[in-house]
Image (cartoon, rainbow, N blue to C red; front, side, top):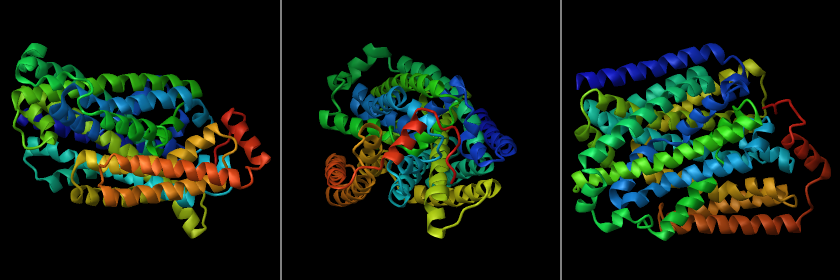
Length: 477
């Protein structure tokens, strides 16, 4: 294990070094929050892939493959489809807005302030996404060092918080590129072929597994539809995803770099499911499906290679957790806190404030990750809140001119409240949660918008100038 440990330690030290490097570049609010809006195609595509494919996509994706077979790919497929849809349909307009948060977009589109509602919902989503990714770290450090769950989360979370606080989006972008490379090599080029070979290939797996493991719909039609609704639609509106779109150098980079990232996610989806299937064929009696990834790494890979693959898993969870953490702190510092305190600040104070929020929320995320167990359950809660509360108002603002601020506020409040109520009554992972939330949100948006005066022409004209790229300055905090 010494060589494996050395690989992991070197990787973790590299992440801290990237944070220190990023601190020297992140001297303005734009540099700290959106990397100066200067990322080119390859870097943008790699960082987008890194953030969306986190611990739930890696540890959870393999676990779904272990339980359901090839149909376990649907969760990550839904994520990939969301990135493809976002990039093809909306990324150009989002990049041209020159904003920092989704709430900024809502304020421009509808006029007035909506951050009091949208900011709270988005903040809760981003924080829970951070918690989810940090929670997945326990399976990795358990294999490597024999650490218990809380020690593993404390170590991984401490490193994520450190480099995120130091350099903001510049540190996160640089670490994400390294993590993307490590993840690609470790999962696609090492663990996948090793697992398939040890399981005897597809013929060997067919001999040992039930036929349902090769059925692309075995996970269930209702689950597939729910994944598509929650994750595909959720990827359209998440602050963590939009904040990556804001880093693109141009609208063309945001479009084509995102499409490349979406296609990569599709490949990653099937890789995770196949690894899970191979693990099921070899170790059919694991106590939990979330143990499948760690079991495959521990038993199927040689020394040294095992360390690199575990580093790949760490890369997956750390990239998502750092991206979600900076998204959560951005919303808190720019959408929520200024409106609570009625204070504004200059550029340098903005950077300092965002660092403080990143530190405080990072510590909170570590504590919550220790308390909350279950990778897929925590991710589902986050996306239920996001999609049920904000999808209608955001997408409605992009596609329906008649939608107004009153309708948007009504949809956000009723959708979020409905999601919370149904989760408590039907269960956190119940499929009907998102359908009730979306339905109530949509009805509220349409009815209230039609029953109240339309958005003022001056507001819509300003919105159109921004989405057409005619307004170049950034939206202030």
